Amino acid sequence: MTTAHPRPTTRTGAAAVPAPVDAGRWPDVAAVPKASRPVRTVAAAVVRHALRGLPLRVRFPDGTVLGQGGPLIEVRDADAFHARIGTTGLIGFGESYMAGEWDAPDLVGALTVLASHAADLVPAPLQRLRRLWALRQPAAQRNTRTGARDNISRHYDLSNDLFALFLDDTLTYSSAVFRGFPAEHALLPAAQHRKIDRLLDLAEVGEGTRLLEIGTGWGELALRAAARGAHVTSLTLSREQRDLARRRVHQAGLADRVAIELCDYREAEGTYDAIVSVEMIEAVGAEFWPVYFRTLDERLAPGGRVALQAITMPHDRMLASRDTHTWIQKYIFPGGLLPSVEAVDQTVREHTRLAVTRRDAFGAHYAETLRLWRERFTERAEDVEDLGFDHVFRRLWTFYLAYSEAGFRSGYLDVQQYLLTKEPTR
Image (cartoon, rainbow, N blue to C red; front, side, top):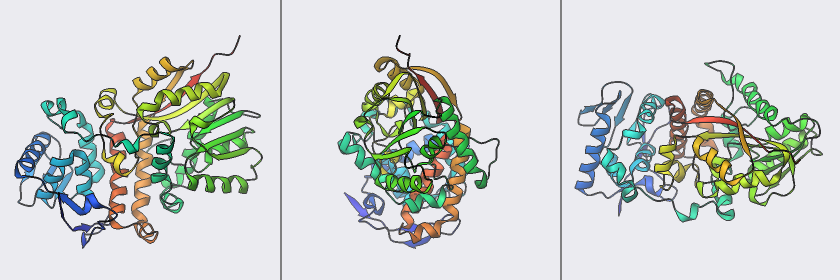
């Protein structure tokens, strides 16, 4: 059971202003789980254990301060905070932020500390019992062909205008590669082109190359490949992305070289000299990683090359969380799971004729990319509101961008560019 619990809205940089949460849109944010006193007591004890040695300050309404000093987390409603964590763990922690029950002046700093200690925040005995208390992934979010379309649509079909508010003019929604830090938003288009060009160079894309792109985005890589003289087939499951990418291709006068198709990667046909896929594997799901990599193998001509960009997480944490339901899956990327470097290597080795011949990591560049996106999203909060996204959505996306940035700043997350090759036929 749950109890209604109106929460304040918080526009980043502004004071909290009481506002009701739309229970129809955000049922699990509007209502605090009805947790028993023992559940809240145990949750409070786990929180104390997790925070006591961390370089954080967590201040509660009664004046209690936990932690060893550092970025501040201000808990505004301790009962709700503990009830959510006690019933839904880290999902509850994120929902508590969405509800305005806690805040942090330096959200990235606070989350970076937590990400740095992700493996030991929960006591070891509870970690070993994870399968008993952690929520399971909903069957409806499996990335079957139907499920994958629904999962992708929930994120990428939100609004092209929303993404345009915080991305740069290339509309590239993946890690850039900078020349140095700190970067400015004005440098982001060049940094995105640098990333794209590195991938196209890895795949040796040039005049006459038959290129398959799995995951179109809004078309910038396809445009850049076509400008090299390649013939590009690009696949997406997002109607919003397909429609805008097609318009951009026509405006660039490259419709004779680029085909944007609403198509699952499993439905791809033909053979290609090169394949490029940028941060697509994260949406595939562990169950379908073998299918994804077999598809790359089957669609690639002998002697061909695959350039793959992938976000990765530590192998032990991937194994611990692969079957559980997370906040990021519930609200941002349903059905998604980050692979580990070991998982990619094993899947390629056991299920394909491909070979991993190169891997370059550049996680610090993703942290910088996310910082620029987050700052632009914050600056344009009123424009986000004008598009019809309410204060809970804005807190949701602020948390998502900060949470992701913290993952890369702590080193918990990384991003890789892979080169996969296939031996030519003798």
